[in-house]
Length: 144
Length: 214
Image 1 (cartoon, helix red, strand yellow):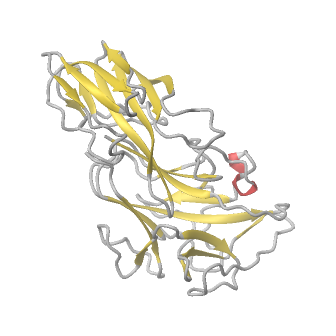
Image 2: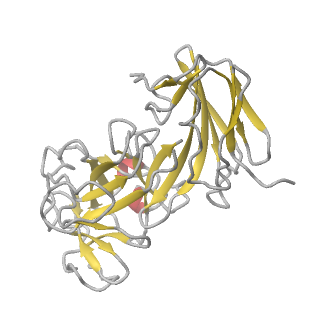
Image 3: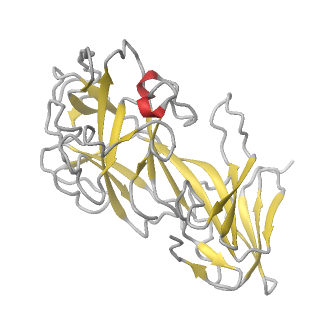
């Protein structure tokens, strides 16, 4: 069995593939998302700790981000990883648990929760930045 | 971009001024270090007392009463945060904008939030101090002051605050109006209010920051 890993894989329309940094190796490091080439994305995959891929395809825009929690007086930890696809004014949000919070927490590492939200309200009722377009380029639009 | 580093500060003085930008301390703001704790307590505790110094507070017959003073317990001494709370405490709180500061050294993907939870699992709000599962009944009150100071010196009575418990939209602090585009200072104020009928309790809830990056 291979080591656990969590990262994104972007397949560009021109055939190039970019693999993001493994968050299991460096949970606070540069994921590589913001530095992706400015060109059209064909599909976005999230690799889960089992090595399987969740793939989003056919969206107008894509996003990826990591959620961290830091209690006062403690170090931060990676809580969840998100991949999102936007189309027709809606965002499909896939949230994957990246760390187990307690023995009693029914949500396990690698579990995925999905929801659909209006654009601009995809994360706790507010917008996210870092969107990249299927037609190329980073979208920093204010959805509101 | 990597995860932004976050630095927690408290204002040790009574000058309600912004922190000098950046991760370093200045003449007012001192770093809250790992293992430090936030403390609401009674008025006999004073700045510089030994660690674990606490004082009682009387449960009111009606209404609620604000904990007199706020400290950071650094494991050696307790250091007062005089500007924390409202004018109903027994220090220099009120319409104060700069008692607590968070410095982010890089951008975020979303608005950062402050939340209170039972423990560092960040999954439950069952303790009495957090409203026994009903966030609106939380004893912990907060207000984000990054953009402006509270309007009223009693910002709880003026209903400018959030009752802090869990991650519900009405029960967490939204520390900015948008995702952070780069290094930023964020500010907030906190108060603890003990309601009539609270009874005895012993709880150590966790103040947690939720933020995103890519």
